[in-house]
Amino acid sequence: MSTLEKSIVTDMALAPDGHLKIDWVQAHMPVLNRIREQFEKEQPFKGLKVTISLHLEAKTAYLAKVVKAGGAEVTITGSNPLSTQDDVCAALVEDGITVFAKYNPSPEEYKELLIKSLESKPDLIIDDGGDLVSILHSERTDLAVNVRGGAEETTTGILRLKAMEKEGKLAFPMVAVNDAFCKYLFDNRYGTGQSVWDGINRTTNLVVAGKTVVVVGYGWCGKGVAMRAKGLGANVIVTEIDAIKGVEAYMDGFAVMPMKEAAKLGDFFVTVTGNRDVIRGEHYEVMKDGAILSNAGHFDVEVNKPELAALSTTIRTVRRNIEEYQLKDGRKLYVLAEGRLVNLAAGDGHPAEIMDMTFALQAMSLKHVNEQYKALGQTVVNVPYVLDEQVARYKLESLGTSIDSLSDEQKLYLDSWAEH
Image (tube, rainbow, N blue to C red; front, top):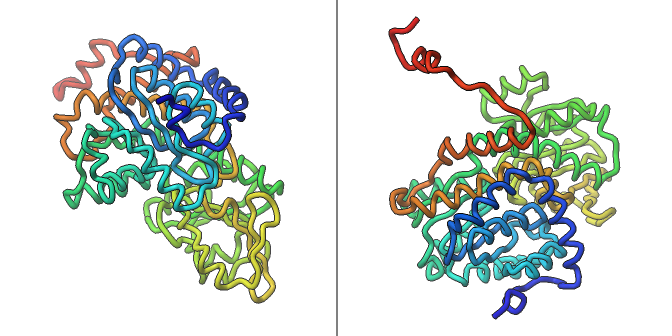
């Protein structure tokens, strides 16, 4: 059966546009291109089945093609209902990859597409947010029979994996790609920082300069969002639950205060915590008329929409990806992209050059877990530092940049307690 016969996509006629998108990002992903050349020679996944669940847009599509170039039979699905791009899905089917994904499916359809992507009984998986792992450990354990292990993309997924590991329920090793240096230092900080504001700006068409932006959470993603907001001319407030991160935000030049106080001041709100209900009823009650709420965490639970709806008299879509909630006192609050990832649901996600490093880590981590899965056990595994550094070196080389190396005398000095 061909990939076209097996796949579920919206419209194959969209494929030409999808190919153009994939070709564009491929031209801007030199690290992944280099890994593809290695995979074509080494065939590390020959005879294996790989299922991928990531935000299904052009950069993800190219990762899938790189894994296929390594000999794998690849099946792919989305990891968020609003981030899937139908033209990219169609292009992948023409490239010999089985696709179960479409833009804006119902919750029931979305779950069914995830399950279908696993019905090949994969040997390896790449997950984003833990949906594949959750299904394989709950209602469809029969589909996990061949799984050797996999790699997880994001903070939310790693939190779920570590909870499973702690309870002794994780059935196979998963590499925590999000915790690698070349992921969080660049993807989370520079990728999220730029793509969040790309999504907000293209959706609202409003000025940021002079406005007050409240960034909820000051992890690496929050750092990036706050840095870019400042660059756009905003006054930035950070809310945190971690005292150390609070001090860090303060010393980075941002106001720091509890959410109940920040809620009174914000014009734009961006949540990046990975937790639920960080903006909720008590905050809506004191917000300015016209405040704009957005989320850059994985799941649509950070901005509590049910509580906002309960406080509202009318809800309507006033612009693509903007819902207006009119409160009983007449104030209007706006939610972008249904409270889902604003950078992907209302934009194209991180820049290609950033995802080049992240997806290089994904490809190399998948190869690593395939080679070492028996030794790794049923654990959450860090990306080996040698792979992390290799991706960084490939990146520097692609930029025409080099760095110094230690001399033998310098190595001896650093390794010896007696040297001074």
